[in-house]
Length: 170
Image 1 (tube, rainbow, N blue to C red):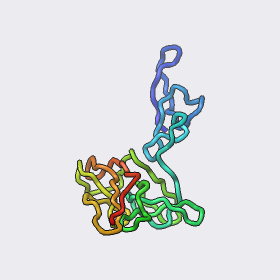
Image 2 (tube, rainbow, N blue to C red):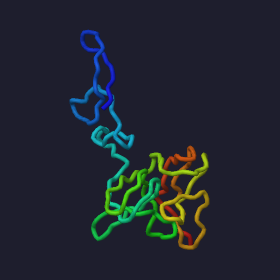
Image 3 (cartoon, rainbow, N blue to C red):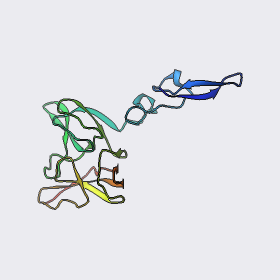
Image 4 (cartoon, rainbow, N blue to C red):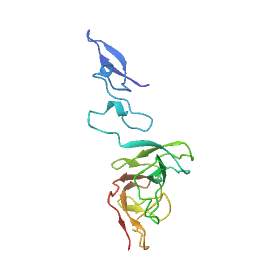
């Protein structure tokens, strides 16, 4: 855990630890981000929800994949989103590869997808007809989902803004 310097009651410097969890013992300490680079959920103010879910993967997922959350006979699971299948709209993305059966951290709109590559900065991206992927060209196939998922800031960074009401081509 990292430390920082502050001043004690006598005016002398002292080393203090960053807070990694919420609660009274963490008052007046700067927060430490978790392994995903996010604030721990228990450090968020009341009424603010973490923009992530942890769900089992029903198939292998690659870093950067856009994913669909689905109900597998009463158990929520995550799979690759796919514009060619109207039942597999994008609900979030994963920044880390996950093998089938293991838990995936699904991140949602407003967060950066850093598992992507070969993007064009400034371009808007849509869910692709290649499972998990993105494209700058909206799908045109009949029955395909047209869903905007974000804008690239760099070749390996997509700020997500997932369209919650995607269209399905007639």
